[in-house]
Image 1: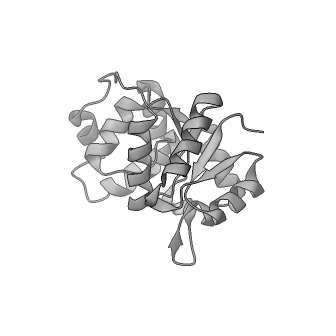
Image 2 (image 1 turned 90 degrees about the vertical axis):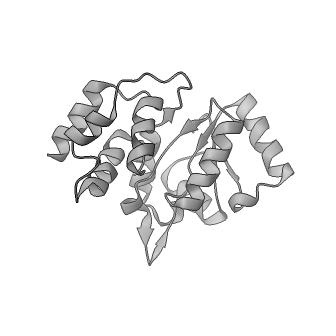
Image 3 (image 1 turned 120 degrees about the vertical axis):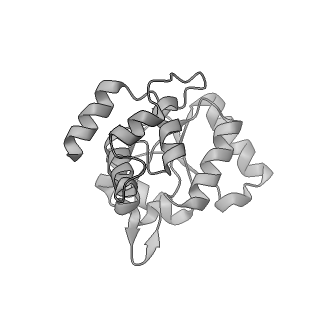
Length: 177
């Protein structure tokens, strides 16, 4: 049983999670996040902690960003888009139990006093920005590191905010290359 409560977007996400792990979940119901739901999330956050596990799409990222501001010590798990896509749909409900377990093994916490370990020059050096395959490289490295997919600017921010070490990063690059 996972100690923290997982925050997901819908009922089908809960069904997929139940196939993978034993965990309590709170459903956001999308971006509406009514007062009752926010109160439930806040209670879980204070008592047990929460892990935000939203869909790897723009709506999921908006929900994640909103919840991160409200609950700064929340943990984050990311299922890569490629592992959460099936039947022309993207979402946690499409992920396999193994993909969900893998994401939960790579849980990260946002560090609001980020280290400036990585810079734009790293993004260029490792072909994560400015190359024809940069987007694909960010997607693959994000999956290896458990920080999800993002555009170049947000990917750099995640590298510095999610506590990724230089060693972890370089090992991920070696796996990719």
